[in-house]
Image 1 (tube, rainbow, N blue to C red):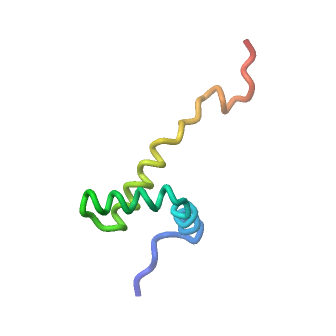
Image 2 (cartoon, rainbow, N blue to C red):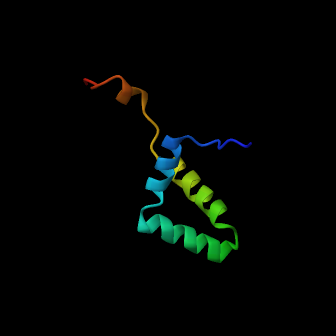
Length: 67
């Protein structure tokens, strides 16, 4: 018996990510233009989204910075 490697939380996050019409359009366009599978197009979208999030700055994690 094989076990699914994604947790319920990860699955919900993926479903939420692809509930957007923009995300679905991105996937459809990538599938059409690149000729790849929908699963691979979804991976590309998630990689893009995860890269575009701003990194936490050390100052932001320390609270308010007084000057």
